[in-house]
Each structure stands twice: as structure tokens, then as C-alpha cells.
Image (cartoon, rainbow, N blue to C red):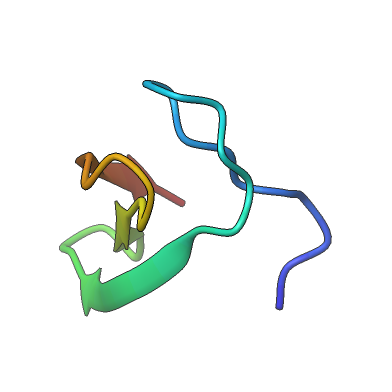
Length: 46
């Protein structure tokens, strides 16, 4: 797992599931996260 803790932007829960990673043009990665507590989903570009 990564060193930085991912927290849910909606409820602040910190045991987040990484749903999928997808490569994007330009060498980045879109990481899709889902919170098991409030079912909020979001993406992060890395």
C-alpha cells in the first residue's frame, strides 16, 4: 500500500478500497476509490 493515507472526502473514513487503476495518456494513472462506509466514489490522478 502507499505511504500516504487515503481518506474519504465525504465522511473522513480512512479504510478505503482501491477499485481500479487505469493508465492515462501522458504517463499518469487514474486511481478509482470507494468508501465502504458511505459508498462515495472518487478518482485521483497520480
